[in-house]
Amino acid sequence: MTDWSALSDACGSAGHVPALLDRFEVDPSGVWSELMDHLCPQLDTVFSASFAALPRLAGLASSSGGHDRRWVLLAAGAITSCAPTGDDVFEVFAAPIAELHRLTDQCLREAADAEDYVNLLQSLLSFEGVEIWDRCLEGLQSGEYEVDCPYCGVDMFLVIGEDDCFSTSDAYTLREVEKVPLRPSSPDELEGLAKRLRSRALADGQQFVARGLPYLFGRAACPDCGIVFSVADRISAGWH
Image 1 (spheres, rainbow, N blue to C red):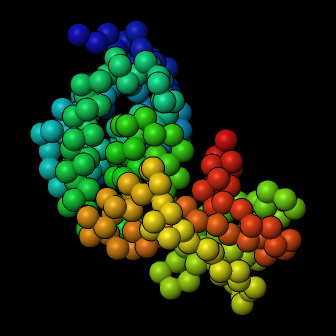
Image 2: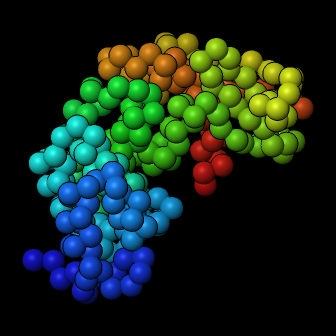
């Protein structure tokens, strides 16, 4: 039995967390933001009560369905993404994390749109202990990443859109700008996680996500100095 009063959340003692989880069970979408404010503020900070909530969240995910289940999986995914690879969390909470992973894998096959799919895919990676990409795939559905040039330091946008994929150092949404096309990797060049993610997206019928991954794991050129660099490496560097 968990002694919640001995644990902490963003507000101090976590004695109130079981009641908060009870309310989350009844109304996942309505209580999700409040739950995250206590257990994972800004989706990047955790406390002792955050990981202690994983067994309960796994139980809620198992007993719920549809969009309710997705809210639970996203909450658990945000919490788990804060644990670095190899953290004791993955051993101590191995059983609930495995169940959360199983249910997320199932939900991915049922996701209707790219935003839902990418969010769930990030959760899946978090349950596997995959760092960076358990948080940095969002640009595939938002359509852009902000990075700086590894050579000249200029700030730029890397746009991965439905109709156009390019780099620019100007505010492209406000006016016509110079665009340098991104250079996607060919499917045969993709390896490891990149290859797996693309194959998964194709198998799940997520053509938009599958199309963007070769650009995400491809190359870009700085529109100011012309240096060519790895898109994924630059996004990773910005995360650190």
